[in-house]
Image (tube, rainbow, N blue to C red; front, top):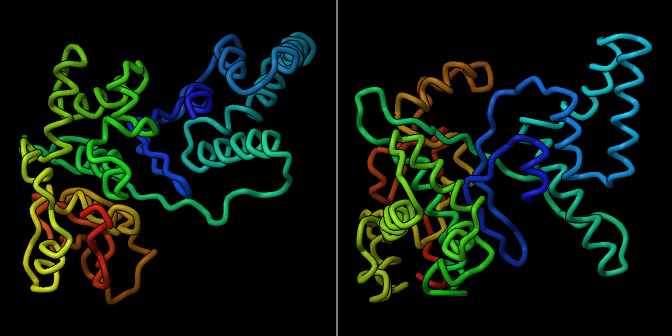
Length: 301
């Protein structure tokens, strides 16, 4: 994952890897022009030194013999895989499959389904109020192992971004810090970043309630009775809005995305934003109105 991140320019903000699926929170910047030297450096994260050397020589000779246009056409064979979500996931899955098959002496495909993606509003609202879509999604991802009943505290599950950051992982810490920077908070040092993020994981200090149980029966009764869960309770449930909602953010952001893609929806659809049901997520909306089993208690709830 980190090698593909370094190659592609796509930034991993946080992640969770379970036994049969994984979640990634990614920042996909706009494409940037790359010098020959920068492209060769990035190729080194995915290819062998011999392969990188041959590609470097190929580009150099093309530039000398046929000019810049020919060299740029060669570079485009590799840069087309950068700064692009689908290419990032495709490369990651291919590289992992190659490693896994070699290690276990097997052949063929490994992944059974195409990945799902959801667009998340990253910035603070225009009125200066916090939009917590990005932080909420990050917390939901890092709490995967807690929902699965594997650990009680996400810092104890080594295969997630928060645990990697707690263990001293520099890239993981950078990713979580970048989430806060999107809100204009440039926090210095992991102690401050980690403290604020841990508050978000437990929704501002509700650790004691979480440790008291969030009993499955209690959560189920609230949902069946048409009541609303707290954000802390909801994050410890399975929330389909976070995987099937298409777009997640404030009402204005979802409507903006809907307007830009109006042709993708039926003529009877008048508005894009659909508020999240069954939980208090501070006004977050999605593009899809998931009426059936949108939020369900997990085994650990």
